[in-house]
Amino acid sequence: MSCRAGLANVALVNLGCRVNRVELDSIANKLEAAGYVLTGDAEADVIVINTCAVTGEAEAKTRKAIRHAASRPRSPLVVVTGCVASLFSDELAALADNVEVVANKREVADYVIGRFGSYEAEPAAATDVHLTVTPTGRTRPGVQVQDGCDNRCTYCIIWKARGAARSFDPAGIIDEVRAAMARGAHEVVLTGINLGDYRWAVDGGEMRLPGLIDHVLAQTGVERLRLSSIEPPDVDGELLRAMAAAGSRVAPFLHICLQSGCDETLRRMARVYRTDLFARACEQARGTLPNVALGTDLIVGFPGETDEQFEESLAFCEHMRFAKMHIFRYSRRPGTPAAGWDCQVDSKVMAERSRRAHELADRMRIEEASRLVGTDDLVLVQYPGRGVSGGLFDVEVDPSVAVDTLLPVRLTDMRDDGTLRAAAL
Image (cartoon, rainbow, N blue to C red):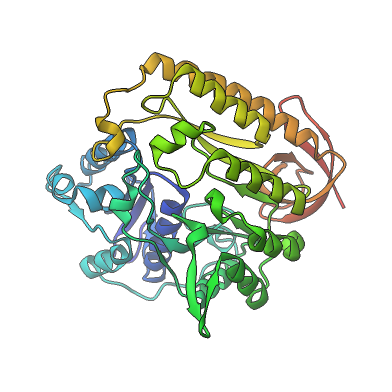
């Protein structure tokens, strides 16, 4: 597919977290509004790469992606943005003559338009997929409400790449939610680098995340909000009150970042909580939201983690009954304190710990899914015959139900792999 004479076809490459994907969607929306057409990289005149610096491996993937894009036969303009671009702008620009670095993601669309011009986009056809999904093809669009982080975890470099914590104007957030709804979205995900740190001055006071949830639900007709990952200290009574009061309009899911279930490891990580606070947050969440599903992140093989400390961490995870776990082997990240420590864990030891953590995660997911059999839920249909529940469990539904439908169901039974089956209500 090609666009009007004078404009460029644009390919989008995302590396990294949900916030990165949301930011790339924003770039795509602006370019489409200016008349550009999104294509694969083989047909692209411009390739936008949104980079990730969360691990050394992610940074290596960034450099590989840039070299690959720059070497495409059409010799496209490669516009590099994101966290690695913020940290190593000159190094990335030197990778190829057709690479340009625009570290500020909010300037990327304007930069491309400045190079190639713009036209008013034609109205989308009734069958245009972008009426029901984001430009990058997702059925659950995100709205970024916060950026940056004031924490200084010893394994993390993101605070250097993204800067201090800052929150976005509620009026703009409302506009973005309404725009997502206009494209056909039934569920919108509120995202941020440190989502629970949202704060905005209003009427002599301060709007925090619970107030923002209330505000979005009052000012829009969005059918369901979902929260992205949140830090344990921010899972408090006010947040849970807002979620409970919203009923089915807020997904019964909390992804609470753990990183380790061992207090000594959390201390070395410079995390801002210990396991007792984390456990209280989970207990309070389950007490307020009976069908809530809990997810988390876990790092195995952090420098200095002994066998005993790993066992302690794994036992804590089992006690928390997580429904979803993202498990990472520690990745040495140059520029962080932990990367310089002389107590690095052997890669084979990390691999075995990762295997065991995944084994536990799979078992807990099936156990948590089984608890929901016989309950009612809302399933967002993402593919023919398949969707996700409020707690992000996979659910089989009637294949005749249209994709991108938010379907009220009763969860009737479960397959051996943990996939739930549902009947429409």
